[in-house]
Image (cartoon, rainbow, N blue to C red):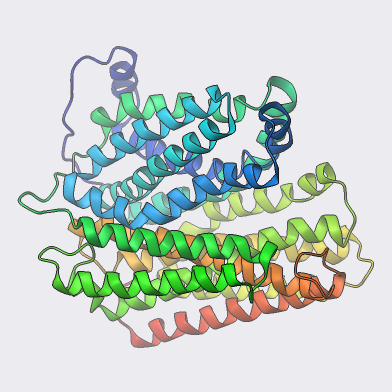
Length: 480
């Protein structure tokens, strides 16, 4: 780990005492990992609380969906911009700014008295998360080189998995016991701690002076990602052939073309030309998009499958996912660091994708009616293992393609590509599942879910083949 002492601003009281009592590296890792946990938690923690929010704020179905989508759109759309900002203004400064914006949005969401205020607050949370997540990842990549990086990235992956998976259980418990505002307030201590401790334990990571921020490039790529994610979110309701889907996809394509033209002409582009020319970076981005589609869609499909095919109640379906969350956490913490050190990130990623595909095929082959313990649970455990072994190494493939000074844009690119892939995968495979009923908005049948899991397995396999191409090219070093 680097030994550069961070700047220390003012007197911190309890924060200074904590920083002195706990080894700096351990405290820095805990701070960065907890930030990612909170960011991922807020992608799902509000879902279970939506009925209570609808009742208290008189929200219709469209308004309720925007409580979720406002966060996802702002987060996914601004990740690349947030990563670039970390490189330009400094990683620690971007981390603190992201924490402050996220905390502001969180408090506003908890205090919201109207639907408009809640949706706006969720968008502010998404903006903060888009600054916070790539800044935290880039700090982790820079502060934990060599052997320590495998352990640190494994903890990051565990936090991502646990944050997204625990949101449903935590959201239900808080809403039932204390009310829906507490699904937001529960993250306040973490965000406040980040503001207090970051100046004392994180490397400053000075920004690149004398450079202009590519405003036009940022606007066009953000618009393209937002249009793409919004289109994907609308597919399950409107279908692939609707005018809404066609319009959204066309707008995303047009904005991406404009972005490419703007970047060629920009004096200081958002994505530097030498990065665009990197074969490894392009391959890593493809891996992130395809892998995001195969991983995220599986958990959505499983949640629907448990309730619609196995006819489990929502509470029972949530409990049925607990072994998946625990397995993903254990594999990320105990198994992944060892595998990374032994075979490197590319081979680890390929191994994880193959295991993921195996789990998806197992669930697809389940009889109807299926028994959870013997027909479904083994597949779920394979899926959790595959996700844990492939998620973090994919990010490492992209990180290895850029120098340390551009860790921010690499982090933002990895996160944005994964988010776009996840949105597209959920839309595509949910549509495959529902098509079995003859209507894309209908409840899927067991055969429809089987087809969707097979499609997801094919995507995971295709991603593994791309990963094999990276391995064969022999351009990526092992983790020391």
